[in-house]
Image (cartoon, rainbow, N blue to C red; front, side, top):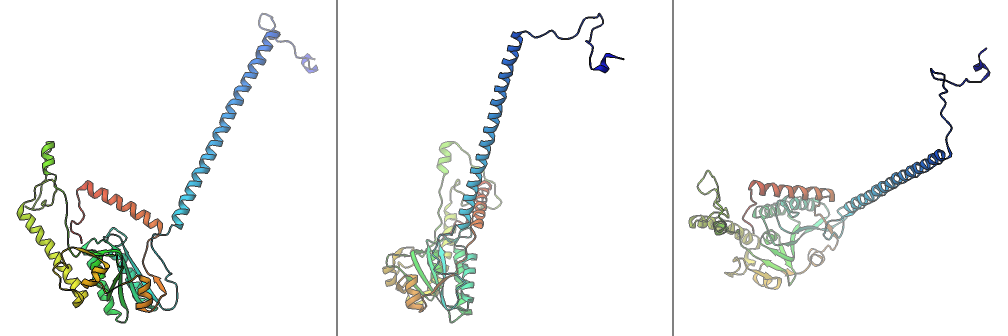
Length: 347
């Protein structure tokens, strides 16, 4: 029977009969191995510590990023656009309807015709509305946008003959802002409000001499003799200047006609009235540009007779505002890159 069956494994030998078992380790070798083992354990511990620190850093980074995102999202959700809102449209019973017209009047601004007209329609059709206040704080803007609003006020007054409209001017009601105000049955303002500026303006710069000094050549190709007559890098001919003045005069006459239609014989016969000058509320009252001095609260309480004010001003959600502002910024940049221009005429 083999020795292996008894559990005794014979010593292996090579072909020449020599033992292949490794020689016993010396004490120095054992010390060296222990030293190397300790070093490897220290290195492993250090690496594991670094990995743990990186994981902690990533977790804290994710935490703070998430916290920042939650904060910004919460701020966006709870943000309320600037403006006074005395009551909500859900209030029942009779009330004075309020519609805000604030800032420049233009298609890409908060005070655009679509928003204002939509707010007015909601205010007029509400069965509890006993009167409508246009609270105006605007320096003016687009003749087209202002004209849209003016015409819609006139139409709504015809559709709802028992509902009067009152314009109340805040800091300023000038140019396009006053154009809209003139459609109301009566106009009020503060004694220090700025009212008027019934005129039309078109402004730009001329850089022809600058290009010459810099040695820059302007290259414009057009189909149409006067297609580039408002280009700031080309000279403006006298004939083109006269033509453009005619366009502005025509627009000015339209403005004057609408103001006279809205104000009637309340306007004083003053040659400066339509010159583009602007007056305080007290001066405007003397000229017939407004009917009295007072605030929205005063008009609601003492003129309309209903102090409960409900705000019908349409406003976008905060998310819509962010998207629209981004889109408008992108559109403006694209327009500049492509050489497009905004309307050069404004009230």
